[in-house]
Length: 334
Ligand code: TYM
Image (cartoon, rainbow, N blue to C red):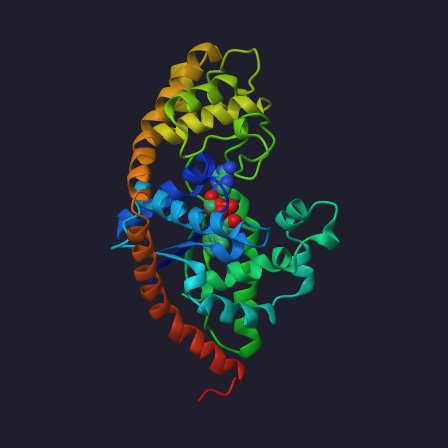
């Protein structure tokens, strides 16, 4: 059976990168009906860097509400927050005793996030990919739709699954396949085309947030870094133009068209024409989601009840899988 698992951190505002690289694909996969879909707001991952407790609760609700507003149907897909289902941590311990120090030391995201002062990073930040593997494997997830930046973590999850299977001589865990879909698998910062668009970037002008209103979106796109050349008529002409490529890619993803199709329309034109068209499209796509999000956030008790129900459904799936792991590794069970 094909079972999708994916997760998203409740740290700050969701960005257009999260939307195009992940959420929109989740909604499309949910619509295909050929998968069972499990989507998780990973609050335990969020505390690998310090969080204000009240803000974390609020952000968890807001991310869940954003997913619903974007089209995740919690009566169809399972939607919950990670800390409600203890099986993730229970499995993570076992997987942490399978994964090797060297494997974790190679993770580029840890190196980026820890920066130069690595001794001061939390051990949780270093161990983060083990919990991520457990998130997926607690459900025997087979497919994982993510943006490009999660590729290395998923390769590690596959290595951990394989190492567990061979350590215990079982064919227990499937090797989860990354699904890196759509035109915008890596949306870049609006201020620097070589940096990923991120909710943690110090400059709010570097990203479009899913909650930004029309004026804010238009202003950010207007001020986005570009170059003085007109747009080329083919994708190859964007190779050395990171910022231009990023904006055209965003347009293509939002319009569900290829980069070449977009350039067939806008090739030869300057950013004075292209940027307003991009703003209009971004507002058209994000506006209704933002409005729905505001409505949902007016009723936090509803969001909490959705997450609690999702948690019950998730636990029912994960419990027997993790029970079997505990038995396999030799834990005496009553
Ligand atoms: P997170 O919260 O950083 O991002 C959530 C999803 O959004 C994608 N994404 C992007 N895609 C394209 N361009 C961007 N600029 C961009 N920024 C973010 C991410 O690739 C991701 O798919 N470790 C994960 C959360 C996680 C998880 C899991 C994912 C925890 N457990 C199990 C899959 C399966 C993370 O921090 O995503």
